[in-house]
Length: 149
Image (cartoon, rainbow, N blue to C red; front, side):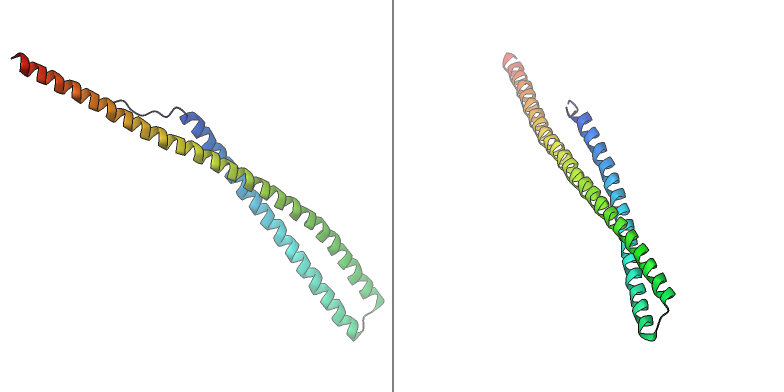
């Protein structure tokens, strides 16, 4: 019996490798996104807490220097928040891009796997057909040998 060999085996291997690399890149982009998004969340929380503290101290009375200090601190936080918002948007876009690429690669690998499954079924059917022919020939030869005797 002949062993099965898939004609696109090398292509499938390459596609699986590409899929694995894309999967790693996607996971890395998710981690970067989560890191930047968490940092943004923490800064927004810090800004809100600072503004609440400033408002509480304003009701109790606050010197001009403290007001100026809080104001400068909040402006600095806001600049960092604006920068992080852009980074979050970029990280999200990158993550979505890798997600789409991963989906494409997964579908491509799946197509080659389906082709392989169908090809293997055809191979098995052909092997059974050949085996049947061979058995028929053996049967015919045995029958002819009996007739000759």
